[in-house]
Amino acid sequence: MTVSDALIARTILAGTVAEAAPARDLPSAWERDAPEPAWAERRLREAADATGAPAPIAPPSAPPLPPVEDGPLHGLGIGALQAAYAAGATDPVAVVAALRDRIARHPSGRDAVLAPVPGAENAARESARRIREGAARPLEGIPFGIKDIVDCAGAPVTCGSRLTGDRVAETDATVVARLRAAGAIPLAMLATTEFACGSAHNPRYGAVGNPWNRARWTGGSSTGSGAALAARLMPLALGTDTGGSIRVPAAWCGITGLKPTRGLVPRTGVAPLSWTLDHVGPMARSADDLARVMPWIAGPDGTDPHAAGRYDAGRYDASRARGLAGLRVGVAEGWFTAMQDAAVLAAWQAMLTVLERGGARLVPVDLGPVATAHQDGYTIVMAELASLQEPDLDRAAALDPGTRARMDQGRHFSATDYLRALRRRPLVLAQVLDALGGVDVLVTPGLGAEAPSLDSLTVEVDGTAHPLQAVLPRNTMLFDYTGLPALMLPTGRGRTGLPVAAQVVGKPYDDALCLGVGAAFQRETAHHLGVPPEAG
Image 1: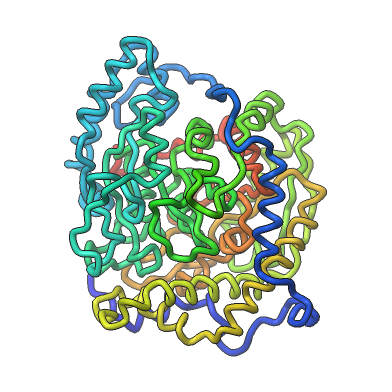
Image 2 (image 1 turned 90 degrees about the horizontal axis):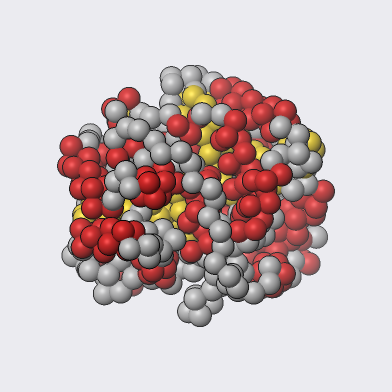
């Protein structure tokens, strides 16, 4: 499939920069009175300090195991695998072999999966031994995939770029090391857009087709992670999120993904795109599965200067025990319901009905103006991208045209543009936190429509085609900009039968409550159990 550089550049910048003039929907006094940028980090750090000790004092209890499931091994999620291991119905050696076979046979194994991680079979044998001997670790024998910007010792990590050559990582990123220590098994390196910011059509590896319809995209930049999970190539994957890159493929692939609170999962060993907005997080098939993972990857590592706080597994347990009774759910319209297909809005409203029927109370909230904050987020991303990639300007011709367009735009911004975007960030954070003061979580529509076409790079909203980037990050970027936790989960199907989703947003370091709300919804519905037709 040939897509012109001009089309890629046009669609990747649409809606993310001021095309005529700045939105100017924020108070004019903010131009003069905005504090220094560090105030936003201070506000998040204060919230982290309120969570208590930086790591659990005692190992958190895992959610209850589900019943042992029938069916092929590749179809089992994290909890289902743990139940099967506990019952002696299978072991990690058989599971890794089944997933290797699945990857070899499935179309997504040819574009979502870039390379196997060496040593997975040996790790599976060690996990099987530990399970037999009653010495299993918390995530023993759970295979996982790794986005190709996250270091995994001994594996090729190329950031999806021709500029990186055949680089092999020498050490694990903190998040990979923590999963290994918990008994999980690194299985495969997964596709990303170039440097987590390029276009759908990666010049080195090609595009990743959506398992629900291979003429559509998965969404970036954790594109391989979304496809691999939907295609049942593995039960867990790592992604990163700077403008929506965990939540977008989660929405369009019908899986569940958490962008944790900024700093909750360390970024050490993860190639940066934007040091101000980057987040690392897990993707799986359900909120319950994510809750099994989060306690073991969260907390500062002493290296990432922004890493802080802890994951409070007790909040998830309490949420599970209580259910939805008394939960205050914020409902925001305006920006969050504009540029949304009617099918997406109907599925979101149906989710709100399920929550309300379970005992939740819906509360209208106004998060304030969003358009300028949205543009400011992308000003930061593109300016920081340009700074990071500046040493490779002499090789820019080899970059993905989408990466190049964003880097060129970042170089076009003035220092004043960049600093203004940073200075407004703490004020927007304060405004959003004030708006959420009377609710427990916020629930918004997810993305504006079903997955975009790979040939036109457009998204159809109520029958009208829009450049994908004008729609894709509208409801996601604000929560990268503010650093709040956000969970994306499936809520049904759109006009052509592809997944649509909604987003649960929490206050700083209340990630466990977001997962608890998602799990409660998924106990009442079956949207997260949907399987793409070709996945079998």
